[in-house]
Length: 630
Image (cartoon, rainbow, N blue to C red; front, top):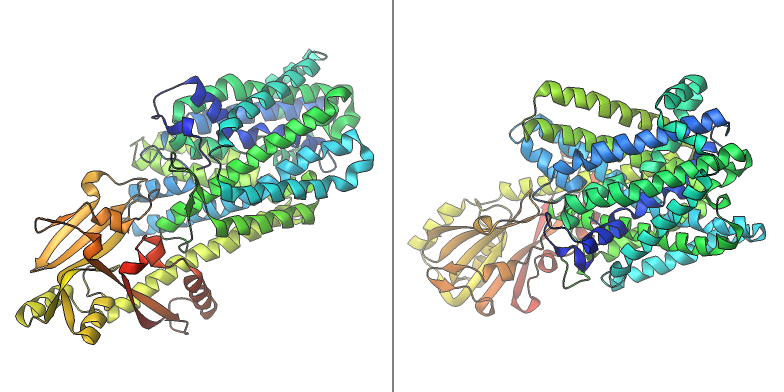
């Protein structure tokens, strides 16, 4: 779901070294920068004391979390749930919905879970840039304590530049993402390796007994520490989300051969430092760096965190675009920033929203440590929802036996619920932020979805049956004019209001009338065989179903040009498009509460017009208004 360089255009099963490096830059930016703040949060102000026993216990939890959650759960299980090659929460939602089609209750539950996961991903998109860049810039305070007051202003300046750059696209900068992240991973791996060499006894943490003893020894405080341990997993969702761009093989290889070893070396190096110098708990990552290399490492960390931020921001763009096509968000302006790669998009409205919220997070929280509490809930909540949806797919789509699915589910859900529970303990310390943000996004998505349903219900109440209308026109033909008229509608069974208004006011019909319905499939792209559904209703009357995948642009004129009706090619230059523009009025009718009706009206008024969304040329368009109460 995130930004994709041109080198990622190869098929999923093809592997090249360039594709591996590109995957390192795009997919792993978030998880690769977690060493900047994860151990600091575990042993900092709100963490446990950095005694040798506690350090070994936390390191054991970190090691087995990376192996169990990232390697086993995401890399080898979740990534099997591909929706025609696409991954991510919206693709998984569509796949799970298809798996329970016909079961209304289960479908509603799955939609609710998927939307909650998408809402939390928005929170992730806000917190990741804030915490990543803040944690990198905080190295300035280690190098020069007198500059601590400038950490937030420097962070704000970097983020302003990042968001201003979004409108130019990421095709060029994407080419350097991989090499920069490769240098970053090699650097943190070497840094951790040299420090680890001073105390190899820390490798005892590979034994899971240390994790069990840590939990038993620290009790409730040990459980709360899981809220910090989950930070080493931030970005795990990106492995699945970016599967459609790179395919599973480059992601699995780059994780196993490069990313995981570098992360483990750095975490164990920080552990060795903490055992030898417990005072380094204030910032173990930067205090591990030799003094002469401190400023270069700060610069490299800033570059790496900008890349991590870019990846999650682009991921939010892609997910929003998919949510729009699936009908969960209002239409918005989508700008394609690359002629080579379809997945690279920019949404100005979402960019402005993210900018405001990220600035609020940076200024409001002021430090990576305070933001870490907010970050954990977004990460653990998304992981929990992904697990539930993937288990549904495993049972209903892959036909795994129920006992096997239940056994796997108990293990994975126990881990996910433990992480989520530990982070909920930090609700007052900042965990409320992604929850409030997620609830707001969820209200918008559910209100838009429900509002569209109520709108369609009101429209259908006044609809005339299309078949009866066509028969009436054949029996009593009105005056005909040359050319083709296209009427867009959401219901092919009824007469479009624009057609009725045109006939009523102009008292004419075109010599060829095409009633078009645009349908979004629960797959990323439509197959050529399912793109069109054409029905001949009568002389010069046709219905056409245009089907697009949720990752495609609904370019109606271009799609229609591929049609032949009655042996003639479709000529858009001889076509007039008729649309009905609804003026929606909020009332106290049953369906939604009045405040949600008003929210829907606001969203509808500010949504991108259907003409722009369907790419209909203005010089071929006639819009006819109608007033509808909901």
